[in-house]
Length: 86
Image (tube, rainbow, N blue to C red):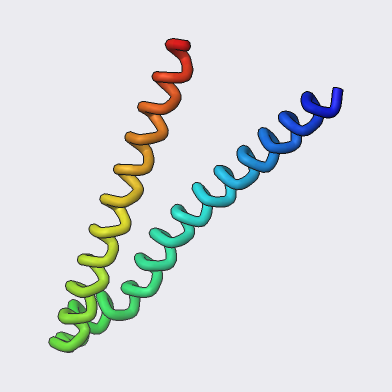
């Protein structure tokens, strides 16, 4: 009985961690985009060249985060496929 409760506890903790981690990654992407909003306006509307540099830097960071998320998603997919085969 104790072992079943322990397994259930860790499964709930794992699911909670995954949900928080997933939403954390989504929030990270959203925050990066939001942070660039003002610089987009400055660059395109006010022709501020320095804002263009900040946009390029922010977009590079967004690309990096997006690639990390893609890798995480693929790994999760593979793990689920392997688990389903067993």
